[in-house]
Length: 396
Image (cartoon, rainbow, N blue to C red; front, side, top):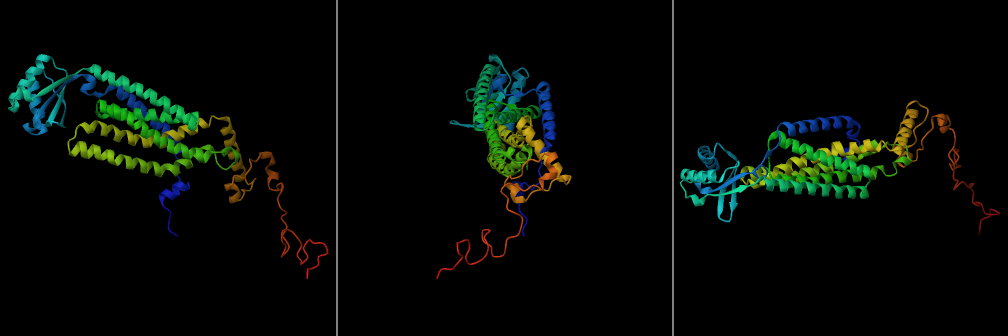
């Protein structure tokens, strides 16, 4: 017989991935990563774009040469007339008037802007009116940030209400904790690597929240299915049923994440990297990093955190004790395990330790006698042509 694939073994719980059982490890790793991210926020901070830090932007025609040459020439003009300012970012942008290079610098005065434009025109050999410039105030970036925070608060509130109505408050708490962990870790990567934060980055942060929520809801829906009525039997603990749900939905979550990351990766590596579409870089980068982190947090954090919260429920605690007591009795030989068919139906009842000795001897209510039926008997009736009819005579 051919061996079953990984997906089939995961669904049946035969792959042996004990994710929930190792939750202390995942919590420890998550705590260490959060600590590193917070230290990076405090020490390195973020590399803010001119929309947040304030600055100037210069646009020159792409006909002046390559992007590297244009950036070098602008830096030369800034060194001469810009008081030591440098180009922060340079990208090739397409517009109605054709392609052009956009150079973003730190804040310059009005006199410095005029002098830099004159020096740039002389270096490129073009007219001054072919170079356009604009100034961005940091107040605009602050306004974008405040609107983004307001959107985040509204999103979290709506998500919490939905999850409480759809599942329960513990699942809502675990899911929202996973969302915040996703944001913190993604922001930590931005801080440590030094990726520039732009308005597109903020939009990307809000976008990955929806993807992370989808991953968590898929897993929690399977957890709810596996744990429905779990306290009525003594075969599985809540944590084991939740771990089985994780195994069963792991391949689906992985496939969904891969399928979502492929176009985002194409947007980032091909659109921004090879084709030079700089406007796509900021959005593609945060989506790629955030979606990858969303998959990890939905698997390694959300469900283990849910199990931790559920274990404080007195009903779940009592159920776990019954399951462990029954397994201990079976291990000591005090209780014979019941048939697989009965176990699958949840027919096992929790066994009290004092009643263990009587568990195998007492017949069940309504059980048939263990004696063998007479050959040819039907429905417990004696064999014979007459059956139970009076007189027992055959009709002619």
